[in-house]
Length: 286
Image (cartoon, rainbow, N blue to C red; front, side, top):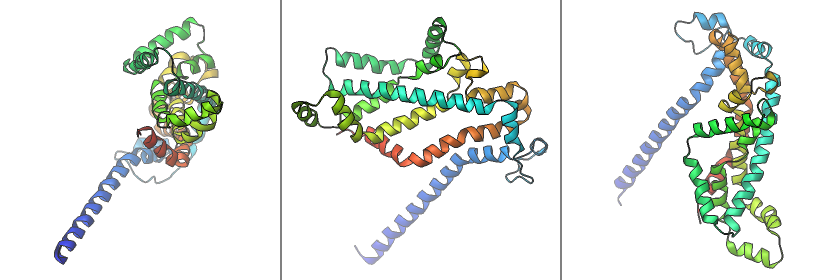
């Protein structure tokens, strides 16, 4: 290829790279703008926010008063504690169920395993609304409304996470399992000493995704809890609206949302590499 051809190809690559970065920048702005607007609204006074005919992208007189309002109008700190308990216990129980189920489906041999797993996967086709109705009826009949047990039980298993981890477990060679059995290693020891360490990125990813899911849970807590002693942060946001604050004082409501979002944002920033690694491993077979 002559010199002109090389220069032409270099120019094309440069233009393509520039276009790629421009599109990525536009996409980043679209994704981050709602977060910016949420924080921006939370530091505007009620009077300033209400008087704006055209939204201002830079507040003239920023204030933190909305944050104190969010904590004084509703017991948001108590809701944080409830949410933390709900998230930690639910995620821990879900991990135990998911790891054991994925190990059973990927390594153990028992009669009807493929049929059971097929039926298990078929559960993913059931609309979530039907599952919520069934769970609500079951929890109510057991008398577990307004209890942490009632909040936690329906969320301790996930077909998708079991499937994801099963696929990851199956990437570990069968010869390794057979060699461990020859050496007299028990299934539980092989699981804890070999499979879990190898698949740690996927397990961390599942843990983080479940944590986010529990922290953002809204529909189920609204259905199953009617007492403040068991409210989660999602209930607190709704309580702000029902108390007449959120309907008009949007900045106070946005302040509460910012406070609730901070732990998840920090969690993602810390483990973002693990999340990407776990998802890529879970989606690669062989």
